[in-house]
Image 1 (tube, rainbow, N blue to C red):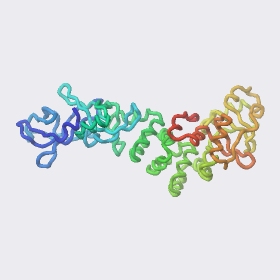
Image 2 (cartoon, rainbow, N blue to C red; image 1 turned 180 degrees about the horizontal axis):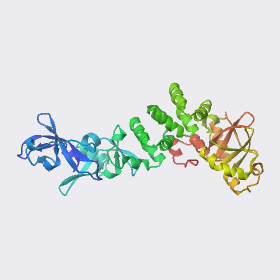
Image 3 (cartoon, rainbow, N blue to C red; image 1 turned 60 degrees about the vertical axis):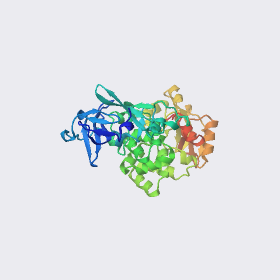
Image 4 (cartoon, rainbow, N blue to C red; image 1 turned 90 degrees about the vertical axis):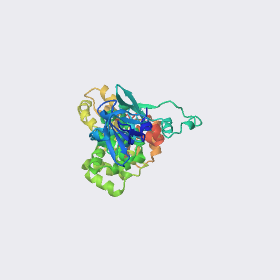
Length: 411
């Protein structure tokens, strides 16, 4: 039986007198497969009444009560109750298992041991045709008539306010997904629902998710958030990603957010915003590992743990003297070298670099040509300003849909 089959059907009291039509059904969210606790009836006098289940004899094409209406003690809706028509039908739900957003076309109900249980939601196109009484056109349209049910325990109902989420495992289920999977869900939802999901995550997870969201939506989401929340998320993002989002916002909004960030973070982002977005400077990150040339391998090894906390990639460590790039080492080079060796003896020099104003296509070409995981960006007399990582180069040459299939190597 489906909810659509019982809605607007007549309701009769214990004496067989019609008292109105079934408007909705109320269930609890406290169990995996909830039971109908009460029904809402539109009475013939245009008023509504909530009738507890213990007064109901049968629900179907017509609903029959066990007693007369004046003997019924009306049901009071509880905080964790769900009204199937108002709260669920035609709403969007997150299918946690398949990581997709679905539309609830109908709700399947089954009677067992004297109770009516909610089994799941029908997300199939045939479900909406059946609900509208258009089953006959399914065959000409090549629509299969089989059910397409998502079990109730596997979905997460999305209301305008995420805090009103009804299913008890909803928030935890979404939090367990990979940020790229959460971003895929966010991309399918409206702005308000997307913000609600991001607000349910901790700052780091929200930042990781926002970085994976399609670029055209990132700015809308950030602009729609509470300012304090937006600042916390920006603070967790890599400077280059934060600059990309802020660069798409109105100037006054960007300035407001930058003013609330930590000075060092704000300075790094402002630096990146100075460069045209299609240049090496516009796509680089200012978080990279660098050391002074006069150190020994052993001294560098002691510093690596602290260095790794603040950089995007630790695979390459750049060597500088007086701010100028003089060499580069891989993490493997450092691990295999003798502790008392000077870094200048181990490093590779000269280093393949790119000018800060070079076009981004040239950045991608150079990374591909030399099989690099990162390319240092320099200006005036080889001063190291940042690096472009291979995942940012991939952004340039691949469409977003393909980019998301490529591993992010530095997170």
